[in-house]
Length: 252
Image (cartoon, rainbow, N blue to C red; front, side, top):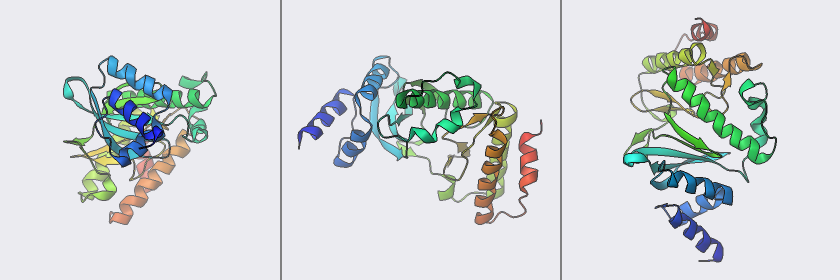
């Protein structure tokens, strides 16, 4: 084992990370810069995290890990990569949002704000009765939230399950209606890849979600509707009218 791997293993042990095979070590090597390590230490010290497990999913900007929180409750630990994340794609979803007018335009400043934004969006959605992962806390580039799944096995995306198409579609529309009319938010990146299925559809990945006063909120909503309609039509659900869907979501 070279020096880099020895250093990574030492960091993983100090962070109570129990999954340290070669594949996991590579994933952790991509996210464990010094600022992230310090953030995880602080969350451990404050009792938000007890154990960190293996990776659940890896995307362009972030990796989600399984973990145990207070009272051994299953949690998801989402870590945005500071050094390698493409923060430029985040700016259009931050600009125009009055909640984040005074952000620092550095790489870390944008990523920290994005993490806080996802936490606040999840909180607003959850308070409005939208089925999303319940947020726990956020700090810098780390977001802690409810783990969706059972016994360390994450719930699948709707694209990977057999389901009652009409019932599932109606539940998603109800969630989007609550999101728009009660939480005053548009998801802005909705597709079959950002909806899990665990007894019911659950909306995820809400860092890019914008308030309905955002100048691009309406165009983002239309894009969400087109993506959703395209998926369900492909799966066999007929007679979907996108204008009717838009009206059902937005009319109070």
